[in-house]
Amino acid sequence: MFDTIVSGGLAVLPTGPEPADIGISGAHIAAIGAAGSLAGIGAGRTVDAAGQIVIPGGIDPHVHCNWPMPMPGVAQPTLTEPASRVSLAALHGGTTTTIDFAPVDRLLDGHASVKMFTTDITPSRRGRMVDFGDIWEVLKVLAQAGGIAAIHAEDNDIVMHMYEKLTREDRTGFENMAEVHNTLSEDLSFNRVIRLAANIERAALYMMHTSAKTGVDAIAAARAKGVPIYGETLHQYLMYTAEDYRRPNGQIYHTYPSLKFRADQEALWQATDHGAIQTVATDEICCPLRIKLQGRRIDDTTGGNAGVEPRLSLIYTETVEKRGYGLSDFVGLVSANAAKIMGLYPRKGALAVGSDADIVLLDPRQRKIVRAAELHEADYTPWEGRDLAAWPSLVMLRGKIVIEGRAFKGDLKDGQFLSRKVPEEIRSRPAV
Image (tube, rainbow, N blue to C red; front, side):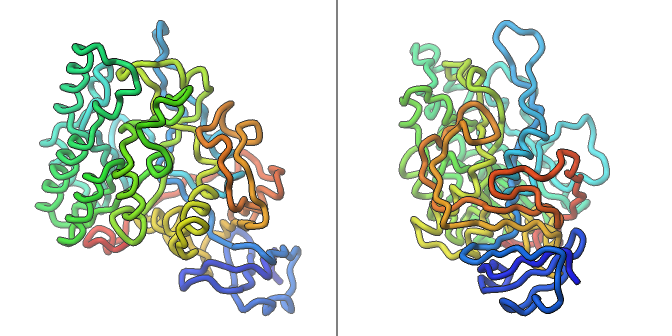
């Protein structure tokens, strides 16, 4: 007898979508059978998934919780919302796993991915950038230890030059951000990091928040040569451009690197279709609107965005409904690929026997208009008014129903630290 059976839905299995029953015992998936085949075994509860899409819980591979946010006139930075708030929002939207950017003073055992910046981002953030010689040395260590390098890649010389140039020209409004964090910067930095990695056996790269066609082209060229490199983009880049900075409260669409242009957006979309982009993340920074709007200059605009809750449904709408992507490709972009690249698969990111029972019932009968007042992140959303083609009706975390309808039935102590190990195949070639 199972604890729970999810019955009658279209399950997106590793082999593809098919009608299936899923039997859950404890925290794990214990059995998967043809539709109706598990009923005779019995369960404490049977969840009717008829008319719904059953997928593994979403994985957001790029969030920032408790992030120090500089405040004008305040000596100590204000911390953004903690993991408890971000996780609550994530669960409501069908994301059951997040990978947080956690600053550490020294590397300890168990860190399978290491993030490095090739720029200080703004003139006031000196000390964030890692010199290329040091990146080279870290890549050697990661290659030997079995890790992967997550890179925020912008050319610091170009970025700082453009800050100085626009300041001299008195064009410091944030609407000029795309001139500072520009496409040439992405071209130079991506290719420079790639050349380092290409000369180190099993030096794997995860290029964070790819925003421009130049970044897409650099990843694609490296993958064609067998370099183990993977591309992440953000839903902001897929759905907004630098023109949106000119809208009222245009700061809400911004993160670093900046939004780019229509041609870049088109290249990013093409790359999500079995190309250079494997994952869609958020670069989550959960803070109130007053903090998001506190800067109006190219050098003080708040980065990050509140976006973890609607991410899964937004990408379903944009890929499956609008562009005709298959359900397996959608699941890859929001869950499975991140699990594979970051060393969590098949425990996470898969509906398979033995996998954690992180299960989402995505209901295409529940169209939803995004309203900040109905979300659980911040008092604003850059997705206000968006029409979504589906929304989760039920979310399970390790076999426990944590969201049912709009009700939270979990506990903020349900979260667990996940140790990760990046597979050899991920580090030896472009395996996803």
